[in-house]
Length: 141
Image (cartoon, rainbow, N blue to C red; front, side):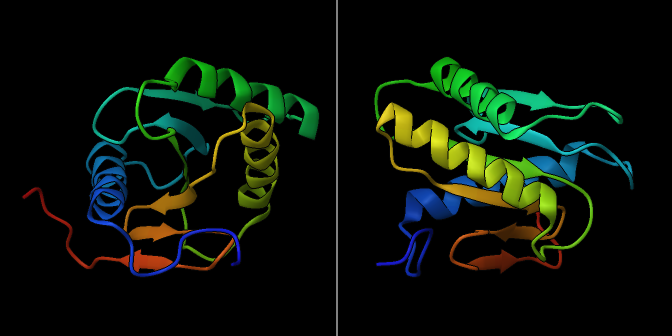
């Protein structure tokens, strides 16, 4: 089977991804902002890292950063999710693929299965499988 998320998604995964989009849409009101990488459980404990404009990373540093976030977010139960929040649409961008490569390496080193999505105000997309979900008006339930 190919990597990434494939329908039908379990109810807990659907809820977690919806929560990630809702939290992002609710808390980020700027049109332009630096991407943030989140590791954890949406709506619960989350470790976050963001790089300011002009801060550049290479693959090795991104891998180390993801590994540190995973160690920080690791709790009993299912492995933590990884999601990248950024402005724009859900089409794949270079930043998505750079963090995906780092997350793959860090999760492989930790022996954990990876679930990673890109999150914008309107939805989420798995950069590996292309699975996506969008909302027109996402509201708190």
